[in-house]
Length: 238
Image (tube, rainbow, N blue to C red):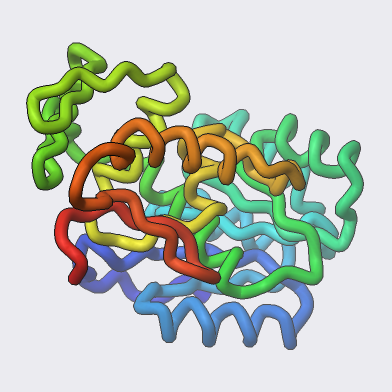
């Protein structure tokens, strides 16, 4: 059932989970709740469609195979009615054609079962961020590194550093999360617009190139690899 609307802080998401598997739903409701989010649960497609129309959710997490009304039809119906809330599909159907069908029906992301909860959480949070972007800064400074977003220019110690478009986009995303750990999934989704793992070393290659340009020849490294977690850009060693 739809929970009573309550006041929540800006970091809390309200998520609609449409999942008929009782154990899977309980696991996700518990995990998302422990992560600080509010979860409404529907056990079939018809109930999910009704709750989705309430227009109070930040993200929909939708199982593809649902009783009464399957997940594809739910999302197609919502999109036809003008509901643009981001959708993450969950499915045991993990072939490329299945993912394409999900995305073409109006889904924004697709996660095949079995999945790691940490990845699901990162994807859900990524969808929510893109749906409600904050006012963007036009310039940023990290230590002696200066980034001009409008001019698409980068300087360190006053020295111009030429970057390729993808390198600049990567640096900008890292800089907007200064001091935070940025995961590989976050980079794939927000820098490459991939909603799946391409199973390539594209991130490693671009991180290496970016590091050689903004750190090589300077006393203090700014771009750090956080082993087993991702990357972080920050001034200082703390």
